[in-house]
Length: 98
Image (cartoon, rainbow, N blue to C red; front, top):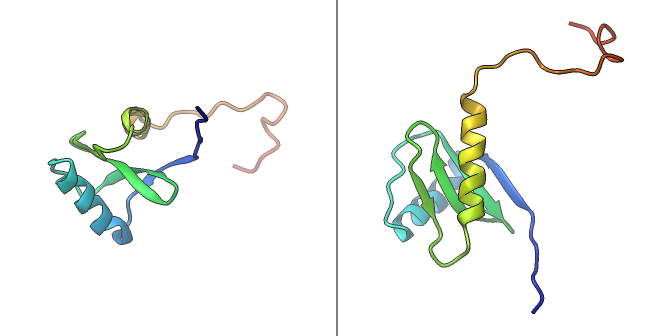
């Protein structure tokens, strides 16, 4: 049995995604009340969405989305971290404008 792999994109939902996110939430019987929503997109279709502040999730119940949801949660945690110093190789330090 051959498995087809598709690239997944994790990104913020834009205003053009509002209807797709709403339909996904309805399909999953979930509520995504936040305006700031991350989505997982495969092949041009949104398969999962996560409300950043509440952590509420909606995912397509007819597709395998566990990995997509895990990646959305990971990305939300990354975005929540305070920005600190960025690691840079020693060879590049002092060569870039500040």
